[in-house]
Image (tube, rainbow, N blue to C red; front, side):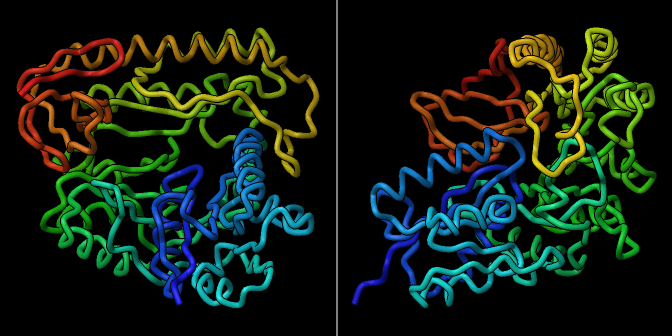
Length: 415
């Protein structure tokens, strides 16, 4: 008797990519396929950070249901929307983060299930391989202790808790032996790593950097307040990607207060300029259109924003999440205004990024990730995309580009 076929669909962040690979390792009695068209069952690892994330997952679920495919929901959306979808029979089953290891037995039972579990678990198993990826992701912590007014994530991921440091080191060693020499550290709030175990992100990075075979370590998002002395000690290490993503969320002090953020605008400006002077490309998150973002607040934000040497930006319009403090606030901002503000920020950073790339005077180190048409594609140490034209097969290789051309959309090279 042939096995039923299982497809994993991942929405959202790098942490979800990790969790998906971990869940795959628990599947024993199903054939995992790479195309949903061939699947009998689809496991959706969902995101719930915005309304559009929820609606995207819901639309995907509806499309699968029409084709008679059984749908299993996991991820952040399992906590925020799982009960509603399960009771409507929109999904066949719901698996919470703490129940990932039970996926095989739950599916084998062939009965609808709702297993949300708790928000206190820590993954015990490790991921040793990443299908269709040239780099490897390592989840170093779960959860967040921040209470930002707009954010639903602490309520669906739980309090911050760190993975065992020795387990992380062993996972990294295994991945390096398996040929992965770029690691991406991920988690809900990775800068909080070690606060509950007497360690720190800086110390962990020092230990990871000593592993033979690791050429580059990339970090997920960190908070300005989490750049401590231990972290500063590794800033000049050759294996640390020369790009840091530091979450600001806003650049008006008035708005940071409304958002219940821990960072302060003027200290942030000093920190970013210090890091830029050290040669780092710098990215951030930014929410426009949050309640209270008056014309005066916005003017202050833009004036400050221009003082930041930002080269990368993950910005989006505010989306009210049920159960958060921000969802109760008045003084809402119209959608068209939020959209126009979003464009202003993106245009500023696009110009900054082009100027940054145009001023690079040293060779670029690129890990080639895929081939798309006539070009190979990869990212350099500044997390900028590079398109490479060559007659030889360089897929999954590291290449050093002595010469390249900075165009507005990306860097181009020929070897």
